[in-house]
Image (cartoon, rainbow over all chains, first blue to last red):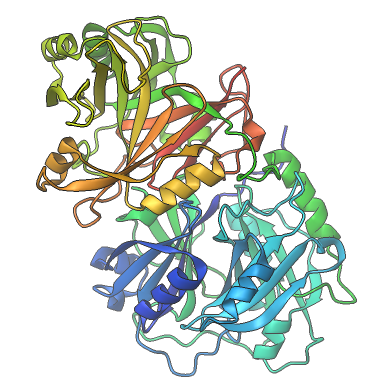
Length: 304
Length: 333
């Protein structure tokens, strides 16, 4: 018998990028990452209200699906340009991590792309030397970690890529230190507290103007379904909330949508009412959005 | 994941935690999808979701001769595997074809009515196609049983003139196609029916993304892919309200048994959308298809719940496919 409670957040369903030019994001992701556009539309009023972002009503969006065909999506929504936003210098969702078949072959492709390569492919080293990753910056200040498993052992934790570029499998959340973040997700969503780590994170220290060997507290938490994680990074107190246009979603890596069995989860800071999800990303499920401990928006969707 | 471990790093925590989760979730194998044998045998169960199981059971018994093999209510473990917690306690009945075929069963399960849902208008599983020895006889029987014929018996097309087919809508907006060879020569190699209506040879998925559907079932499930062709599909045209003269892209993926196809119909995304469903329940209509496999570990997909021996045999797990279709994998043999 498994004595551990099952995490209430089951898996990643939609990663939302908020961008002034959604056509550019769509073009980059489809041309260079093999994603395909499976839905286009405008954000309806009820959904915008459920995000506590009424100014998002009527804004266009596109829903992108990985070449693997999995029902995990990247949604790109239009926002006004936010002056002064610099990726990886504010709290909240800061990067989305995507599983890759071969990150070195992808790098060979992306060097000719408009994506800015901010971290070249390298092994994580140590116990995780089988994992190789690179990092890129997209057109909306969206940071992508692109990661592959070079060994693919039978007990690997990384999901199968299923394509040259697969699905998102980790979302990276920055807070002040890691205790509050870990405590919140552990208590609220029954996620297991894992041992923290201390490590340099080159792309983050570069963005924050810190020495390359600056050590961050960080760690991972497992969602309910295999191959889905939250990484939490501990930023210094000098980094604060993300600038955001009033009534709109935050820029860059904006929100994360998780599958849950039920929206009836106590002690959440709901920002709006539950609504019936419309469109491919919701799979017919109800959805409601809560604010997490560092101001991040978590959109919960009832479904598998 | 970012940099290599720094000098003071302890990653033991994540690695040991990872191992525990891996052990508990039977993380997927390392076999290459491109090189492994096709692990999918064929259709194992077709599940339809209807508001009234007893009524639907009676209709299918009368129309196509299926018979009850067992019945019950959805258990917590099964509902969890389906990612549908509100299915707990819903009645179901499992039925077998009149032929006695032991490879396939029809499961009728109760779902709440879903306002606004209509057959063939949304993405996901839309129809089950069964082999028949005489679809003209089937036509008479389905009408007398109270089904709605949405496509009368006729030759499939000029090119497939020896195959006649019809399409029928049931009480939960589920659609069955019945098809068979009418010449006795079986020019197109259909499976041979051993009763008026025998097991399915095709499950039809409406897709908003043909590339994603083919890639997923080809690479992640290792099924054999057919080429993309164009066909006029009257029942889809009628459901979505466009001209019957418009051809849509269609493609298939096959298991290893004869008659083990999934069919992908490319839906016009401007006229269609994802299927609505009652919260926490399976989709209405054709709710789910179960595929039999003899090599469960070779299948690289993200399951809703960790595989478990739900039905007293090998491991079972479900996933949601690229168009929102529910698919259950069942190890057999």
